Image (tube, rainbow, N blue to C red):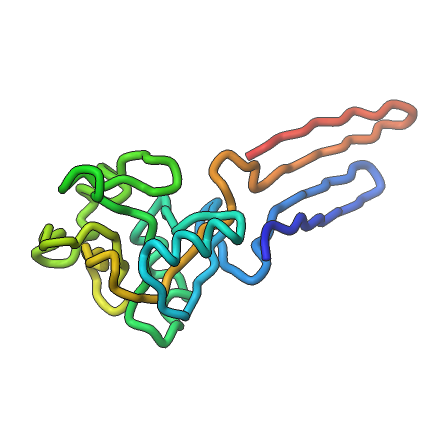
Length: 180
């Protein structure tokens, strides 16, 4: 489990293009993030601990809509998954457990990804749950309930794609590196 470098080299007589990418073994990639789904039910805290043991944390997707429509999520036989958002510190202020960053705006808070009448802020409903089968998938649930979960392994800040272009002109070698 983890991040595995992959290398593809294209060679012609005048130039060489080398592409290095990071793939996600035992998981799936959405954007620049590596996720691993677990179809064994745990409480939110137990799931967070298991993700930490794997070198990650409960998922904090950059794009809820893209994450929700991913084929790995949709092909699953479960109803939904714990994600890494919580409003335990202050009711109504959702934050990612990975780094304490606010989930407001494009991520969760005002993104239009909440299910109808959610978040309901019911008693103890402080943990973020992704419903697999509905158009607006986010729900706040009681953290002590047991659900399947998704870990994020690709920590933010990693270079996920690196492109290196090496041009060879007779006796001189010119090398460029571009990280995306």
